[in-house]
Length: 295
Ligand code: PRT
Ligand code: ZN
Image (tube, rainbow, N blue to C red; front, side):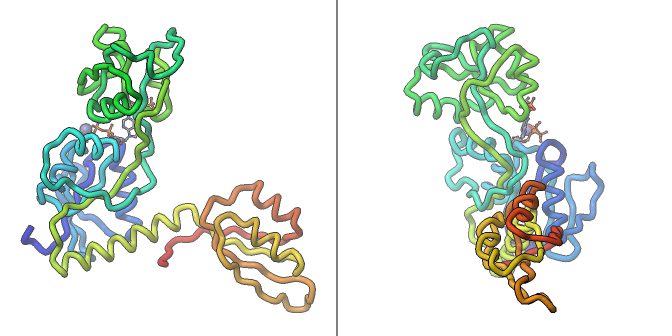
């Protein structure tokens, strides 16, 4: 692309769009557009946002129509297996939202005792590439049957004996008399880019955006935790704090045997974490949200 603005493709509306918009918003990008528009412009940085069907994102990025994109890893991997791009889009990083699994599911009445049960069966799926790759890994000769949608009804319509479909809560399978029997692929939203080198200007914008995305992801579960503690409990408390490195230990005015401990916990802090800290001697425990982080 000759345009110096970084073009990012995200899903217009669907299961990836809220997470994608929120990520960009948390990176400080204000996208001026109406929800029905296909194009948005960021004011603070030279970035344009294209709003597309999720199915088009990976190939638009591969074809250089966009520089980067946010897409489901399931769709990205399926296209890599089935699409003939010379230079397909490349994975930059996982984004930690829109988690789901591509699962093999069979009628509830089956007693499933391993992949070999699928030998010679027809498996209805929108993901024939990933399904075939899994069957090959398992050494099972079964036939994926491509269905664009409503895969879960295939066994009832006798289009397939089993299905391979995206599962989140499992409610759709359950409502259709199916049960998950094996995980074929675990997916989440990912950031992808094309393989053409960016101009130095565009590369600088991309690098700045990546730094912000990493910061947003780091601060997602992170908490700032503060407490008072007996001096002789510092080691035990430090070891216990979830995902904390090198906490700050401060003297407490008027107490020689007590200190204040401050730390950034990079993993979730639960009520039982606080209860355990209390048992180790901590008191006056405060847990604060972290809005932004930069390593
Ligand atoms: O309109 P557009 O083409 O852009 O969107 P789409 O309808 O093709 O895709 P969309 O928005 O449904 O999904 C986009 C991406 O979200 C997928 O590629 C996955 O990476 C991810 N994702 C996360 C899911 C789900 N969760 C999910 N539950 N994609 C689909 N489902 C469907 C699934 O196909 C099944 O029909 O939800 C149903 C199962 O849900 P449960 O909760 O009943 O198990
Ligand atoms: Zn789609």
